Image 1 (cartoon, one colour):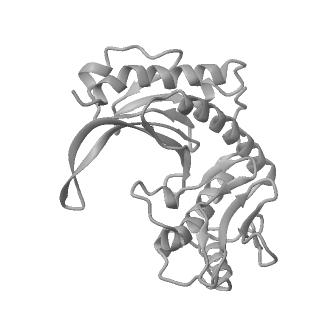
Image 2 (cartoon, one colour):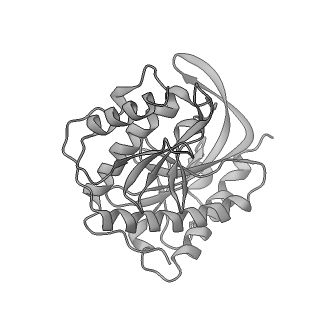
Length: 271
């Protein structure tokens, strides 16, 4: 069952978001770049939210792990140099980022960091019980996403927690290729379909085909209480509070994800 999100989740969610942003600048600067930017995202698991492994100049490597069970950011080198930064200390985004940069500098990692990603002097609130509850919910969502992923054909990415928007999402790639302007240049991108979970505000799941063929998609009814969404962004939406606490919530989420895939994927394949 997908548990309801805590009623007072937002302050802790905002803090976790701020600290995830600070964490992301280290792999952004030092990890092996991935064309889909997976190197700046976090993998979600029972042990926490973890970066890709980053090589150290003097040998060895490290990972960064937001450990919501222990309520610390772990700089993990698998040896006695491992260090921790408390999530409960009330650090601002700037203070948290500065401490993390100092911690990795002691291990030999230095460079130009995207401080604009995390710099903020806003006071931070962190409730450990709320954070633990959310981490458990995210693990349950991850299990549904991974099961859905295992049943998809073709090119599909792992689910990641994306620090920029603090949403948890995966992508399936079609064989159709579209030309799209990015950074002032016309580039080619594969058609794709994401599946994600955004926990802010009225939390929701989404699954958004790109390109979005309104004439094709809007004529299909989605299962349960999911809806097509066209205001501000195009895709589909399934509000979390319609699933949280429902004994059949995980099944309904899986059926929603599969329904959008079955409707959208034929339009995302090369003719």
